[in-house]
Amino acid sequence: MAMSTMYPKFSTKTDGDNIIMEQKLLAKVSHLVLKKNVCTGCGICSEACPKEAIVLGLVGAVRRGAVTTEAPISVDPAKCSYCGVCVILCPFNALGLEVDGEPSLPILEQEGFPQYDITAEIDESKCNRCTICHEVCPNDAIIRDVPTFEGVDAADGAKRQAALTGKTTFVVDKEKCTVCGICAALCPALSVDRIPFYAETAKSLGDIVWDEKLCNACQVCALACPTEAIKVERAVESNKLPGKVTIDVENCCTCSWCEKTCPTEAVTIKKFFDGEISFNAEKCPAGCSTCVEVCPCNAIYLPSPASAVGMKKQKEAVIAVNKDLCIFCGACVNACPSEDVIRLKRTEIRVKGPETDLFKKIAEKLYVPRTSKVRETFGHVEVKKVE
Ligand code: SF4
Image (cartoon, rainbow, N blue to C red):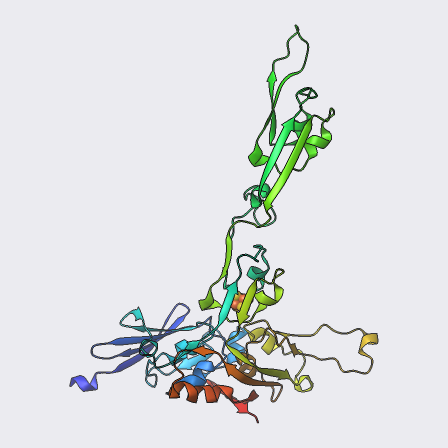
């Protein structure tokens, strides 16, 4: 058989949670790797693909777990040109391109396409190493490299006093101390170095030994001492926990949950997109909550029911979005089973690098306002464009 009839060869295979599209040329093998469980069904890749090789699947059903064999998108390995535009524009890092087994994005290397220009930073001087950002981040993008201390999270962690930088002093007035041992009975930081009782003196004699590492300056020894012989003082030099909290920018979807909830305003996030989103709650069949489940930023919620008195004559909203947390990705629009409930319009795409004609053409598509889908067949969803 002639070589030309053998190449290129295309195939799709599944490896664990990855779906791998392959293009085999005589001298080069390209793989487009889709992380099935990371893909949100936002559809940005589908709109961006210059070869129209990517189609949206059953976004809602897949993301809700009703369909487990599919991914929210599917890629035709023969239509794909393995250019990597989808990889660059995926806000969730769900796609990767490999050439001959190595991660590669030739279009970026040749400056043929820009990249998102996002900001996701934590000001270390303001961060007090609390746990909020780590808990709220929907993408596990916060790296909290802080030692564990005894407490609810790590009963066997380091002693809590080690969390703060400071100096503790412990003084025993030998004149007053009777070496009664109450302090040592109460605290693991103290012990009695006793001189054996002896009939000749018939006295309690010895020293109190203090271990600074175990002392948390709680003052119980001083307060319990029957002769007020103990004085404990603590000077705290820094009330910041040791360690560092950072954002893994690769995995940050710029939802800004961390920024909004940070108690010290230490976080700065600038999103991939700016835009507008609105819900027409009247058209929403209450109880579906597909959009709530598929939103990768946890920005959509079912409003708490108002009291009967509070409602008066107003109809209760059944669905709402916190615009501050929305990144205008479009996953909700693609998953919503009802027409015209969600309206989305992107108004800005933040990029750095050359804004090539290809990028401008794709950006035009991404800027088209859209609303929840009107047509779905297995393996293909079309969203409705609106003015
Ligand atoms: S912006 Fe969102 S995704 Fe990024 S680190 Fe903060 S909470 Fe996580």
